[in-house]
Length: 224
Image 1 (cartoon, one colour):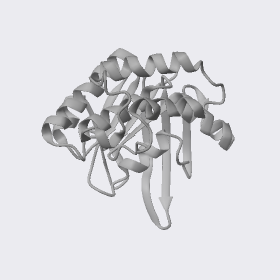
Image 2: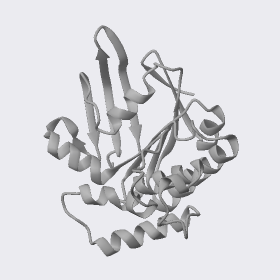
Image 3: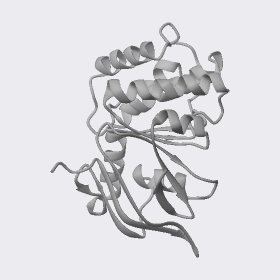
């Protein structure tokens, strides 16, 4: 049986005396898509950070694509994160002095094995075109709308062809129309790029469109 892309078993995470994740089991298959919902402070972002190798469990195990994460050094974790995991946040975090194209290609520079610059630029232009930003490549973030900036952030997260795309409240700063558009875009890219998609959201409309929903409350994970 092929191993899951993401496999957390009985994971515990605490900060001080507060248990944030309480013996959580979480599996994600290749090409999956799901939404994580729950009240503020319930552990949604902590779980996302755990999956994204930005945090480590106090107890339990985590295997990413069959690899025991605990056996990796910090440089090895960083390298795996750069090539296999894409991140999207509520705020786009684009560098204001760079063009949309430059912002998108920047993560490729962080890879230990540098890809062909021409191939990276070709992929960046292709993805920007797919998200409706053809002709906007040379514009700086200040010259783009909020929805356009978030689409640039999505393309940036995909540039290294990750296996999983983690989105933390990606529609939180958008109006309804842009939120719906971005959600559809994420689903289209999930299918086209065959990238597993995990969306943390307070927006029940977004969660239902994603399809599979898991709920976290007081550190416990349940299927919604």
